[in-house]
Image (cartoon, helix red, strand yellow):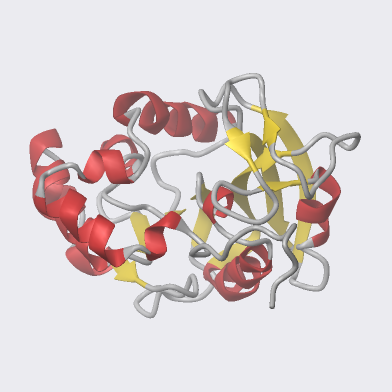
Length: 235
């Protein structure tokens, strides 16, 4: 029997709850499912990437793209079909392409095959050595740490040498206990054992060891929920 002090078993991620996902998508609440703050966080990602050097002729990979919260901002900025997306939920990809891109008036700028459903961060329609910039925003905040290494290993081949992948996480201060709940300045409570997850900076940087990436800490980037940013550069 589990020790009485251990937390009750939960799904690894809230997105593993298929019934909840279907209910929200069918009710037209797919923006809620991906965390809301649609315009704010989508624009935040575009602005950050432009400051990091993203240009219209670059190729971009959006990891955990969902229903294209960042996509509706990135697709009109990039040249046609220079945006690629991966997500674990096929229904979110569908509603993003059929609804959100149409609302934004940019559906003609993206081929549907550029969006791929995978739970292991693979894109079977994407050629090797193609991507210049990648973003993995609010993905590892919902997943155990091992997924960060899986993401880095499986996405490595898609990036050009020197290509950059940016990844966000909830950062736990060194003096805080990993096993306890932690509430950040933005009022978000995270844990080491359930979604949303927090991590020490050193653990996230260590996830890149042996994967062909060089990891660098970027830090706070004005995310409304207080997520920190890492940069991984393909060796």
